[in-house]
Length: 326
Image (cartoon, rainbow, N blue to C red; front, side, top):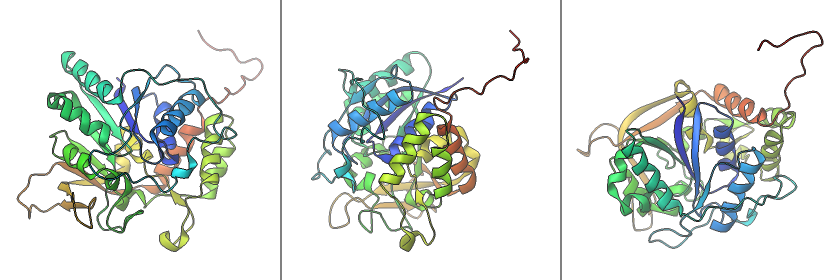
């Protein structure tokens, strides 16, 4: 049976890869895409989500607009906020529109429905956690309908990519992160410490470009247009695709190694948005997350590129004389 997921996102090039990977994977049933402001503003994020679903031929999946700003702090936009809506020449335009129900209500409604039917859903959180926090505050009981939340966020030993002490998704709304961390829902965290272990190279982009499906070529176009490489920082060629790890874990958890830990976030002061981790029980707090520490880089890159490359790909022609059994 397919794992039922909601993707909470702020697309974003990384988010595009995560969404496309999920749509390429029959092991997952995407119930909806909920959108939050982050990498780009809310309106552009919604348009990007609609473009990606249309590109993948999945206009049946609903898109829901959510929070346009963080709970309390001043808004901090993503490094590439100037991108806005993905260029039409890379990701074609669409007339797909978001549904009228808000992202917060959709998350809560889906969790309640899951409870009533004796099942639970998974949330892949690849943007600021505002929508999820608001849904949990709207009705704390919905936590019973959520099997786990896979979060791309935080950093511990690795310097942050916006501030030295913080990863962007947590920096953008630390108060929302604190609500989610304290929710009691099982958490799986993919911090920069693990996402920066896997760098996609020119070889990977060439494989996506060589695909005979539009999604692979579009993702390669986004990655080339908004270069993610930083050889001074990473020490080798290539750039990360952080957010897709949340989806990859659901597909092939054996690619990752992690351990239980208590995690939290600093809410105020000059280092607001800093995540902390206690894997040894020094704080006396019980573990509230599995924090991923290592990834099989080659297998992760292969999973992302091969799955996305086949979205919308034309089937291979059947050799003459070969028959298909009914």
